[in-house]
Length: 376
Image 1 (cartoon, helix red, strand yellow):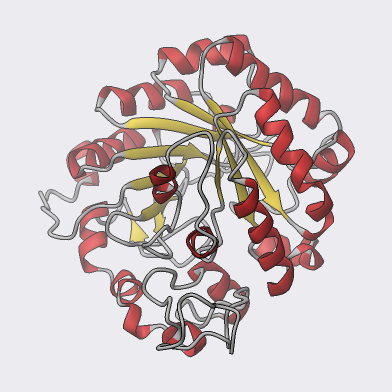
Image 2 (cartoon, one colour):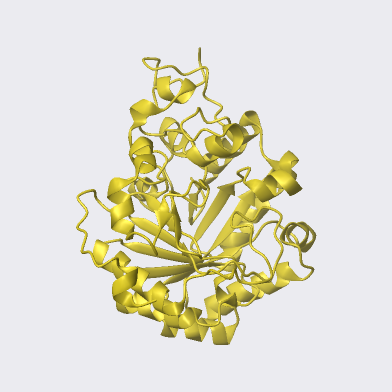
């Protein structure tokens, strides 16, 4: 496909501020078989994935748009043969590029190529405090040790990395050890993903999703752990987490408290499709508001990202917090939390419904005390 054909022959100048963060899943191919995969990846690339030429044109659009941070993920991005070329192009256009990987393909040579492509950081998935837990969840024996070797390769190669860890029922008693492992391995951040019931989760591990009370307990523990933890803790998929940080007046001992305001959702709520928020491009060019919210907005082969950003009725609805329904619509924290729109959609079929995973509802109503979120 020619460049001018892909760009629809138009120069669209958006009036809505762009997202701060865009994730581009460059392939559905993956060398593991994780039980929770949000991309529903497999051992082969999808036949309709964007070509390298199409991918570079999309990256040009993203760079011209003013996006600050680009995350390459998948599938497993390192399974795509031309990934380093794509990453280098993104970096050459001034994008700050990071990569999400399962870590098993990261070695000294891969680190050199990532640095040559000017990738600024790596997130490595670690889904347990031990090999048995991690390997079972990731679908491959030996995956834990390979991922830790990948982290060590990043450390030795002076490539910043963080751990991405999935919170689920079977690892609730391992959360402290998982956090400790991230720190001991030299990670510069610990990102705990609140498990969402995407289709693969519903098929393979539906019982692993936390109850609201379990979610509250682990979020309170993480918030309190942040005071002594030398690295920042982030929790994608749980907009209620920053509320706890604020309610408990958490003061980290190892870095300025103002840095907490940079974590996902802090004071802004669910970022899906929001100005200064987040949007995702899938391997075939489909656009969705968030990797956790699989509602198709359009395709880059048919419209530019900025056209969809400005014109999508779905995005307009997400941005209007007054349209939130049920307890989320009435909550005193509506605008600064808004609940997880991905969890609402996957569990109810309605992206504007109340977040079923929230422990605040129905105790907090609009006009209730903000200092006592658990009181009636």
